[in-house]
Length: 355
Image (cartoon, rainbow, N blue to C red; front, side):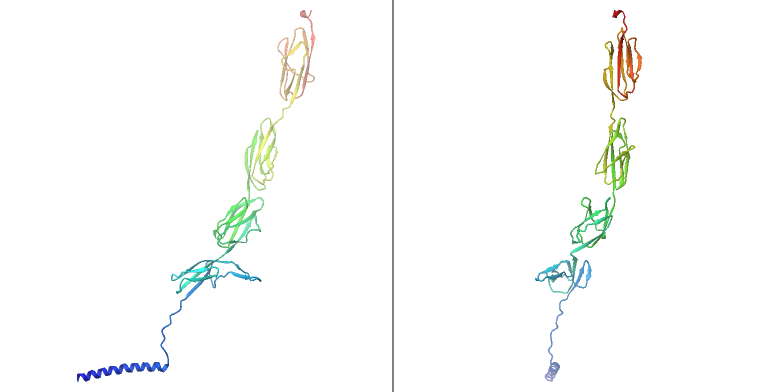
């Protein structure tokens, strides 16, 4: 009985297995289909494009032109800057082919960054003129040099550029330099009227001073000559001229800072001739012919011998007369203002010595 039960159990298992296999064969055979393995999804790399940090719908592309001979010219308007990919993906951008090639195939999002190859710099100038020969654009990261000429009488005050971009000014060449340009710029350049100085130095007088004035204005200084000096000679630097009138030196229109030297000259001293003619028996203590400065005094002593008298004739010039003793007298002309000639004539009076 035990063997019979085991046989029935095994038969039942066989029937169940055969029935399942037959059912599967039936359905597959009925549809005529073959079971296929699952297909893996393709690798996806998404690209984002940026120009000057602003997202673009498409990649910025440099324009190319072809002439009649087939020569291709590329206008380099853009430059590739950098890339950034997710999922640690690396790669390389070929600027000649203008194409990014990933190092491997795996899902990622790559951001490609582009910049302009050159930038414009526009100016607003107050009291000056921008040179027409200035560059229209500046290559990225390079320096731009721009000639800006101030109006007459004005000088550089300041330059203010967008986004706080700094610049330097060269007064000798009237050139504004902007280093490492990386964006379009707008700059306002302001020139202000010059403030100039005039230094006055006085020789043989007083009035040294330094005065300031704006370009084109008049400037002056009060100066005075020392006693015995007059008629100043004025010499100014930087092509400036000055005039002297009523102890005032004036530059009518100051156009450059200057230094003026005012030199007073000595007043010429007038001299007059004094002559004295003496007879044989009258002597004097002074030179018989001499020059006397104008305004000076001249004094002389006349001494007669005992037997003689004399007369002094100086024309219309009358000297001051002072008796020293019975034989001597002193004569003085005060403040000589003309030539004077005096002639002494003697008279023999006789006496014991004369007999």
